[in-house]
Length: 306
Image (cartoon, rainbow, N blue to C red; front, side, top):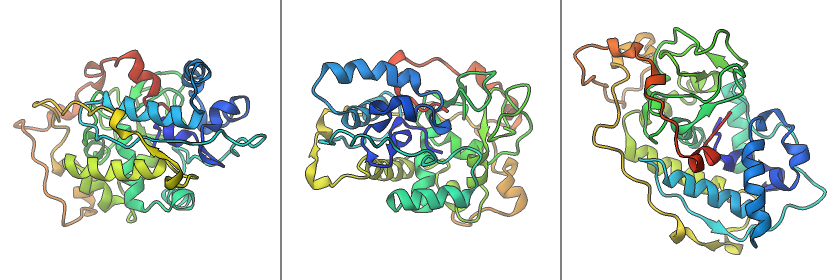
């Protein structure tokens, strides 16, 4: 599922930062594995300034997105109260990579009325995400071939037939990926193929503007779960715009003919064909590790990790 810090920290009281206030409890939840470093880094900033955990988390998420070329600008609403004690969010609220589509959609609908298209749009965050805990033997494994760019490659590459794992053995919630050095989550794999979500998934492939609009809309709703917008102050002006995608962005990952949707007839008629800029599709065997450049320490602090 979406691993922006914002979603990880939407507990029983909504987007209130309870994972920081009640970190002794919530960091032990399986879905929050790997977030201890981020929490420990954020905590001194929160303690040193007159800001609540919920506000700081959303501010950090919005600013971190602005560091990703191609990301949309998201809102920053301020005024979330402190999490209510003694009430840490209960375990099991964040969907896991091994959950099926029905479980994920039901949870997201219950949490904030998110539709199947909203959920798929939020998964655009996996374009700049990496996995640390799905396979604990390997760290920082990206989910697509362009982890420095907030682009639609995730929606293209997950449609390819998987042939390999980045590690020696698959982790829980992992399925085979088409590209070396790239991890594919079981939940992403299913979202790209399930009748409830596959049309939405395909609709974002190669459609940067559509993806940006849908992601920002869903993210902004996610950020205020549990709060009345009338009680918050719109401080979005402090959030900078992200750089645009570079002119050569979007290295071709595959021809449409290579996708399982094409081969199995799951394709939505409304989705245009994909065409490689290369003469053949043998580039699909590229090693993603050669493209994976470590981002700035600030971006790593607030980037999605699983």
